[in-house]
Amino acid sequence: MRRRNVLPGLPLSLGVTLFYVGLIVVLPLAALVIKAASLGPADYWQIISSPRAVASYRVTVLSALGATVFNLFFGLALAWVLTRYRFPGRRIVDAMVDLPFALPTAVAGIALTALFANNGWFGSILGEFGIKVAYTQLGIMIAMCFTSIPFVVRTVQPVLEDLDPALEEAAQSLGGSDWEIFRKVILPLLTPALMAGVSLSFARSLGEFGAIIFIAGNQPMSTEITALLIFIRLEEYDYQAAAAIASVLLITAFVMLAITNWLQARALRYTVKG
Amino acid sequence: MKIRLENVVKTFETFRAVKDVSLDIESGELVALLGPSGSGKTTILRMVAGLEYSDGGHIYFGDQDATDIPVRDRGVGFVFQHYALFPHMTVADNIAFGMKVSKVKRDKAAIDARVTDLLRLVRLEGLGDRFAAQISGGQRQRVALARALAVDPKVLLLDEPFGALDANVRRDLRRWLREIHSELGITTLFVTHDQEEALDLADRVVILKDGRIVQQGTPQEVCRDPQSAFVMKFLGDANMIAAEVRDGRAYTGDVSVDAVGVADGKAELYARPADLDWSEQGPGIAATISRVLDRPDGRRVLAATGAGEALEFDVEPERQVRAGEAGFVTLRRAKVFAA
Image 1: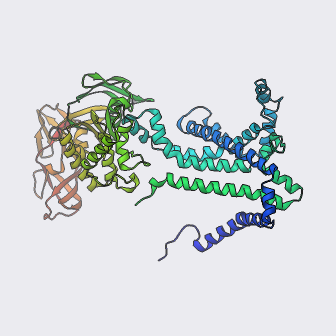
Image 2: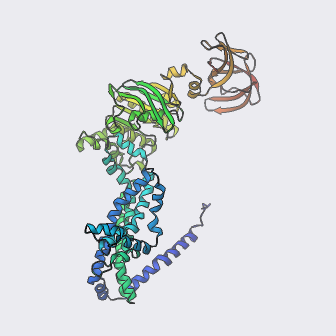
Image 3: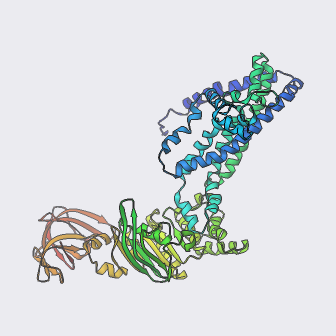
């Protein structure tokens, strides 16, 4: 007798999901690869290694790294506060974490630019100290932080909520200091979720476009992100060059996700039964 | 290490969980805190551990006032109901954790040797490399005990240690914990809501109700001489029959029992199922059998008196009794408490 599932059986559900993945994910990516591949190796290399493209990779990757490191610490702290403390307005803060997801990124970009422009609320104060945010790499980083922090908070939060308080109490009764308990008990248990959140945050930052272009200044060679360069190539109807540069981003994202998956599997070894 | 609680009080929000509890635990004693849920037993245990601070009173470890010593410096071993093993560490690393974070520095060889010793003590040799998810519940609780013992605690505290385990495993672990206790002689306090477990394991049973100690003593003392109807009912199945006390004897129907020291007037008479006998002829308390439950070691009869009081008693496996039969109940012994 075959076991009855609540959801439709394997043939139908597998078919639907494969069709969906094919249509929405694989097909566009394949088109991208085919377009890029229609260039010869020499042309391809020349486009992706042009000084302007390389400069854009550097700006994008370094900004994304900076934003991700910031999100790692600040996202963890935010998740910690939201799960461990009860304070007035906690639910509002909790709801606001999702705002960057809900807001059109262009709106975020315009708001950030208004705030950080030289005559904006923050920009004018920071300007006193000689810190320029708008139209610099720092601005790119801030825009990336803004749009990608929910990834870290929302992946860490449920794990933190499920963490058995008895684990910390046990570690305390065994003589562990707060720092030792955090480092040896809590952090290792959060690591898989943190890595998942951080890799999503990094991937999102690599591809962010709308929030950045308003605040970045978009000077070729210094504040031009890769996504914008692709967009410029498209505007010029140079689809092959756009696809070539896009393929670099695609490969970077793939490699990074593969590495984090592997690290995550390693960190979760203890859950394997047997 | 001798432990003394002196007028300890704990209040949560508006709820008084522990009201003025004083208790002495002798060095090397194995004491059970027994009570229904909400009786404050776990709160008391957690205050002894330092996981909860008392709102009043003092807790002494030996001659030292430990009331305000934080848990990490108190030197207690705590075993949790759901084991609380660190899931990302192997069994051996779990046991070694306390030694690694200790202020007393030990070299790696000493820690490894101690872990091996403890694994042998809890009979888990060879499982040191497993993770908690890879061993059974009973094994996990033994790891938790080894981990607590690794730091040479002054006192061992166990919070419903066998509550999450199967009945058979529970019985084995109980006997085994008793052996470990005899071997190590460490002062041990454990919490349970299972009277059988408390009576099986403890040198002394402390029975709690609503945040107060209602009776304490050896298993023999509390079983043979319950001081209140609550203790009588809580320790095991008990039949309650309304009675009338006159001049030191309690009367109900044709039956009377000794009730020295109970004031004249209405009273409640309590008797264990084993204290009741069933016969077809009087004298006795007239009753009608409503149901017979067959059990491995005898037959449990549910009956009702003329006044509608429910009675339970056991008859020998060979005895033929059926629902609907009328007869008489006599009492071998009973406890009488003023109503």
